[in-house]
Each structure stands twice: as C-alpha cells, then as structure tokens.
Length: 423
Image (cartoon, rainbow, N blue to C red; front, side, top):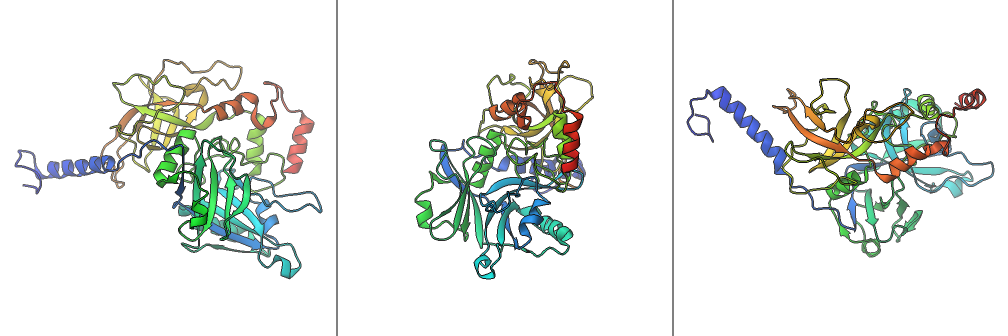
C-alpha cells in the first residue's frame, strides 16, 4: 500500500500516478488569488532589474538598437525624459520590452564632453541576454554597461486613479535620486519609480498614493488594463511588436531612421493591417453563460484552472472542427488573463472591407495538452472571451500612427521609397 492512500484493488503504479495528479491539482489551487486592485497603491516589481549604459557613444549606440528615437536637432539638448521602448532582433521580433531613464553622467561636466547615462529597466530573467546583445553590437563604441547589483536600486509601480498627473516624468523625488516617470503605455497605468536601495525611504512614502500592494496585485491590475510586460508575455525572439501592442503603448517611433529590426516593423506599419493583438480575456466554466460585460470581470474566488506555464495553450472555437487557431493564452490570475487573439475571429473589429469571421454568439475555449517532463500530467480546457479595451479600439479604428489615414488609401510609391531610404 502506498503511504497516504487506503488499501485499494488498483495497482501501485496507478496509485502513484493518481498521487502525482492530486499533487499537481493542489499546486494549481494552493495559491490564493489577490483581491481586486485598490484605487491607489504602489508595488515593488521584483521581476524587473536595471542595467546602466553610459559613455560618449551611448546615445548613438542605443539609437541603433531601440524602437524609440533619441535623435534631436543639432545644438538641441538630449532626450532626458524616461520612455518606453523595445529591443528587436534582425527579424523584427522582440528581444526585450524596456523602460529607459536618461540622465547626464556624473563625470559629464568634468570631462568637458556631454556624456549620457541610461538606466534600462528590463525583465530580470532576460537581463543577461540583453547584456550579451550589447556586447555583440558594441564594436568600437566608447561606452560601458553593467547590471546593477541587487539592492543597489529598485523598481516600483504606483497608481492613483483619483489623481493621474502626480508626476509627468523624469523628476527627481526626495534626496536619494529617486526618479519618477509617467507610465503612458495605457490610460490609468500610473507611474514608474526608480528608488535607491531595496526599500522606499520615509520622505518618498509620504508622497505616494495608498498603501503598498503585492506584485501580484500590480500584475492583476496590468492584466485588467490589457498591458503585456516581460518576456513571459512578449515571448523573446517570437513575439512581434505590433502583435504585442508596443506601437499602441507609445513604444515605437515610425519616423526614425535605421535600427535593428526596423525593416519588418516599418513594412507591417505601412501595410496598415495587424490581425493579431494581445488582449485581456475572461475565463469561464463550461456550465456558465457567455459574459456580456464591456470588459473582463475579475472573480477572486474562482475555481477555474489556468493553463500551466510553459505549455502551448491554444484558443479555438467551441464545437468547430479542428482548424485555424483563434489565438494563444499567455498568462492569467484567477479568471482573467492576457492572450494573443485574432481580431476578426474573437472581436467585432473589422480590419479590412472583407467580411469577418466574428459572430457574437460564438464561444471560444482554451485547450492545453499534457506535457511530459514539465510536470503537466493531464491536459485541460476552459472557455474564454476576449475584450478590446477602449484605448486599443480607438487606436485601431482611427488608423493609429497613420494619423487617421482613410481606410483603403494606400501610400504612394514615392512615400514608400522615402521610407525605404530612411531604413
């Protein structure tokens, strides 16, 4: 008899398999879901780390690698406001999504030359890969870069839905060189804060909104806003910046010149059609009715199972024969999550003049298979509905960065030649 189980006519091998499956289910249910996010608060983002990049050539070096534009007119001051951007590979796929905090280097005045230092906030699990990316492209550039030591600085997110304009960006807070900037990826996301040390000092806490919340609370709030972050959600060397909403989240300047990965990005932009986007989704059980709210409704005490991390969790139409995938589930908390969704299958957005496959009565499901070697003993399935946040819908309907160009109007050959020359 196997310890922990009563005597049974089942063989020992079956009992061990049952025990492993029960353990897996306990793991899936053992964590408690956080309560709904408070109206105001702040969280330390322990999943983010910082890289320092400085030197005379640091600005031109970054200019050739990121999707944002650091170029300024001659004799103009350099960019000093923090901003959101992405690093791409040569195929135009995301390596890292980042926040970048520019400042004048400490030795800039003494050296007589203007030298910038950039603090780059990146997914901690992929910081080493970004440093390797820098080494690969450094060549003879006069610059230096390093990963900040643990505890040297910390990254925080703060929000106050009653007061969205506390800091507009780049300001020093307190006397310990803390830097605050507006998180303008989506309306209501709040602010980012870079502080010295692991903990916030009392003078800074006094001006922060609400109380400290867990990082899981911040993640839940981000999911409900439809904002993806990090390489678990924007899969490294796989996700495309447009599919991941980097363009809508103010992370791409389509007017800048060459950078690594620009060719595919600018071509996709000028075609004007992005068929897949990361959207917030709500999960519901097989016996539950299709949600009819305008956005995902978070239910903390849900008993739904989320697909385990690291498995292929495809989305397909309920009752349909196996065919084209409608999307892929990325991450979730409780009954809400983020997924890459085909817009014309899962939403009412019409991207072209052609008829769409969308039907308001259609339901979709997330399915995942058992994965040997990753602890997933059994597959699963749950229903899912996608929602388009107003900020994403408005961007798509208005033509986005194309400045409301009339639908169907194409760029002239001359315009396209100018774009090609810039790249």
